[in-house]
Length: 230
Image (cartoon, rainbow, N blue to C red):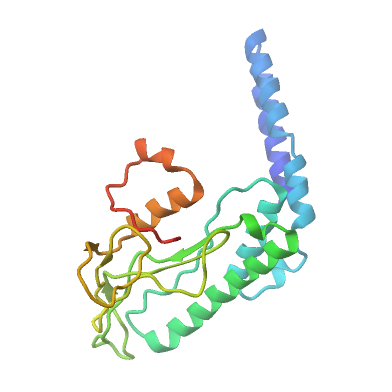
């Protein structure tokens, strides 16, 4: 695949150079060729990719291995690890556990590869979904679950304390308000200013955690500050 991409790029650059006659345009075409054919980083990626990618039955594990290799090669700052099949309007009980196991195995592989490459201290993993499933079954056969508006995120990486849960839902999977500002701990009693945690709150806190609050001016998030990482 890499060789086919390289050949296609060379053919296109040759066509551009053949149709260019002005000195400035010729210089621009040469600069483009030098930029596109400087493939040292892709060569680095090839050296880190494992040999068993095509043999893996769980393709999301293949994604994890490619992402880790790209990060190690220095050509990747962020990537999406994607797995579908969670929209279980039927066959919920048989489909969901399998999908969750596939996803968790892929994330486990990602972290194992990051440790193998020595980049685990620079890898932040955020797992989530755009919505969840109803707390009850629908009328389909076999039974499934439909869309529900609550959600959750799982985070791991440098500076994130593990083994704790922030926030909760009630027995109908409706989110329960949590304290605003300070460490987010459900109080045993008393009154504390509270709000429902939303996806925007998670992203706002991640900006602070990563030191990129400057994005707020161009991409504002009108959100209270939850100190998720206290």
